[in-house]
Image 1 (cartoon, rainbow, N blue to C red):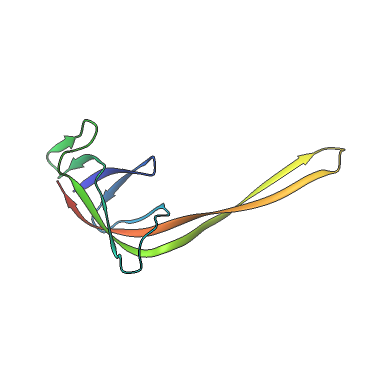
Image 2 (cartoon, helix red, strand yellow):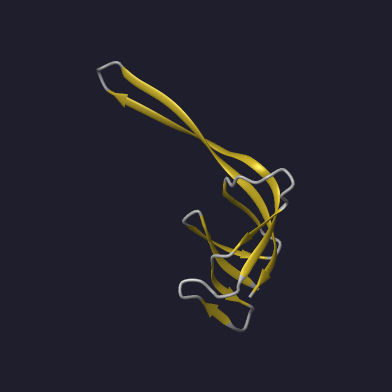
Length: 105
């Protein structure tokens, strides 16, 4: 069984037990689960249900493993030749790591 969910403007194909890095979400200290209600497609192996735009009554539950994870560092280097202009800047995207526990169609 798998589903396609939308979160943060991106689509993810998930099945139970998958690890997923989503955009950083602000959660309380006691919050351990998150639900995705924007389910675009659900498949149980035989039957595929496609939403218009979302599947009614479908939800995907996930446990939060790490509430704040930093991604790879991206270097932005600007350079103009013969002008002595150099700028070096870095960026690390922040993520929340979750494990998909249940898909309800």
